[in-house]
Amino acid sequence: MSELIISVSGLRGIVGETLTPEVAGRYAAAFSALAPEGTFVVTRDGRSSGEMLARAIEDTLQTVGRDTVDAGVAATPTTGVLVRELHAAGGIQITASHNPAEYNGLKLFSHDGRVIPAGPGEDVLRHYKSDQLDVSPAGHRCHTDTFQCTDTISAHLDAVLATVDVERIRTRKFKVLLDSNHGAGGVLGRPLLEKLGCKVTILGEEPNGRFAHTPEPTAENLAGVLDAVSRAGADVGFCQDPDADRLAVIDAAGRYLGEEYTLAMIVDHVLRRHKGPIVTNCSTSRMSQDLAERYGVPFYRSAVGEANVVDAMLEHDAIFGGEGNGGPIDPRVGMVRDSFVGMAQLLDAMAVRDTTIAELADELPRYEIVKTKIAMKREKIPVALNALEKHFAEAQCDRLDGLRLDWPGRWLLVRPSNTEPIVRAVAEAKTAAEAEQLCAAAARVL
Image 1 (tube, rainbow, N blue to C red):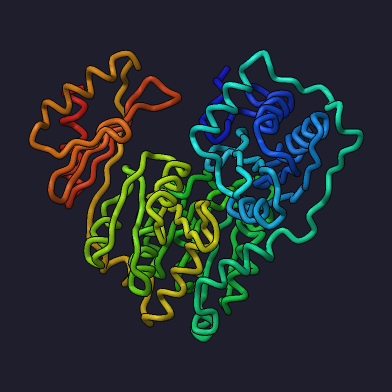
Image 2 (cartoon, rainbow, N blue to C red; image 1 turned 45 degrees about the horizontal axis):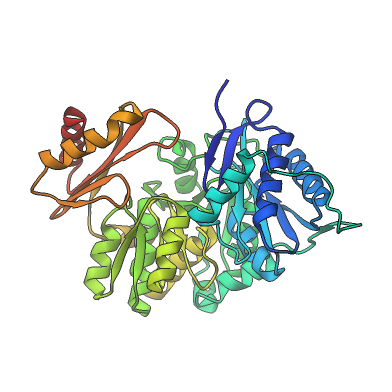
């Protein structure tokens, strides 16, 4: 049997094996015990198991004295907006993100509408595992309710539209193919694109969790969608993961631009209009760093993970940030990775510069990223990383998250997995061959 995957911001598992209604309810109760007074927002990404888990979570939260708002199927960034709009104590999004259909999970939101930071997340995990967790009815509450949220998208839609020139985009009448892959993305995807005057074709619009292809929006998984974009005569193809916090992009010729380019293209567009600090995680392409240097603004890196990026953005008052997995974060909308922010910003860039998505991508600094895995027992990792640092003594060293080594125009990141006896090696250079050589050298030393 597989193991439950637990991180500081939530958990994932195979439904019926490691993730059961009892596990979901207990985890929700642990979160509730450490959250401020108030109502909880509960949402889900469209997987068939989501409704069952939502009932279990809502029942448990009511048992411990919490009112809940059931917002049904909604994207993860929408959940963050709803938590803020409803002045809730927190939120729980039921999603396994890009994992296959047999998985589901819980993602926790704090009262300010962001995925909970590492510290509070570790507190929830400790409470979940402790013998102190009490899921008996709260004595000071005599009645609790689940309320239905009848309008889940308006606040999020308005926030995204406020960041772009809507009329300028509408005059272009872009043809857009959106692949929501039967996740939550189509719920807001169609209204947003239609408000922007686009002629929209949506693949997998119904949020039923019956994925037409493997959910992670990589080139390999989107092979069929690439052809669909060119066949539809679309100006651009947008591809979401099931909870719609990530966005991959396809150009009009059916070329996969990918997820790394999503963030970099938006950073370029944002910095052309406004100057300010930019934050990405330490495994994201250095395209965004190059752009920050080009525009003369501060650039900061965080450890891998959305919560870590948000922490750094708040610390440095960043105007934009995100992760290279196609997760842009716009503080004007919310401190959550947001595919809808990505779509609106890219259409705005195409409109204001009267250019194509391919041209936006092709003018960026060019790099190639290679990602590998190296088997290694956890207890051996510290000594191995020390050996790697010594081997590459000429490189600039950073221990923010694992070991990152930088040279002019290339870098290598080696960090341990939280769930497997492996380390992940990620390298970026001007050519794929150079990046592969860095990963191979790391494997030999390790």
